[in-house]
Length: 311
Image (tube, rainbow, N blue to C red; front, top):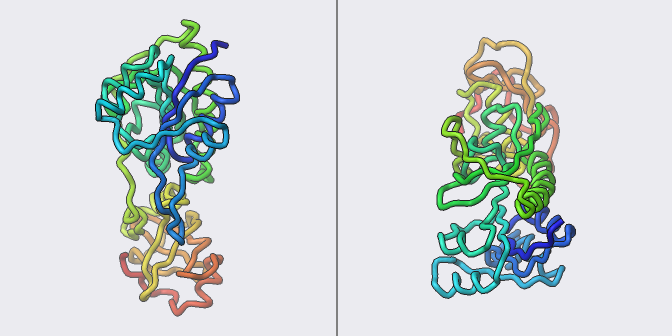
């Protein structure tokens, strides 16, 4: 293995897995770039990102610029005299002088099988779309949005039990292993980057809280995927009375009900959809503990046969 002089640029837990792998592999990580500390949690305490915390624990200097567009920031980066920079869910656009500074360029750990799901939310979008598999692509970065040439890929199946949370963890582990392999292969001349194909390009648009709004006029299989794809964030919900009810788990119900979308079909919290029906197996009222769907109905005034209003 070639010991390389690296900078690491990333912010969330997904990226921290790869930073840990690079350190443990013996590479010289001379500097870490991460998003600035921000208020988080119920107390809105200013918190460092997971990557920031890990880097400081390992004694690595951390920089948290709000932009890399200034000549000063670019000169500071160039002065690191890097073999390569590794980027994973960093959150800032890298200008061309940053991309060009390391001898081997900048490598990105992207959580999809490019060119499918370029963009901000590839994990969630792959589940929402009903994809059978996804994975991680190690990409040589260019100025485009996830358009660079590909060095390595690894795949992960998407099953009927896969949530965004479980898929995130699987892809983080996969990406950590692949980036170590890619750096070794690139440094030793065993890997050659391949351009992405022009066919099969899709974009994973950024998610908002409103993406979690349930619409009973959608098919049941889409709603079931929505519950898994948006767990844990932004979460899925519907309005009942004056309360916003979170849906933490759901399953497809058998049969095709002859009922309007949104109709409550039974005491197990099964709801008719445009096509089929979905059973809400775990739900949560505001400021209450999560409960099974049947227990929820026993404590809430919603009669079988009533229609849940569109959220």
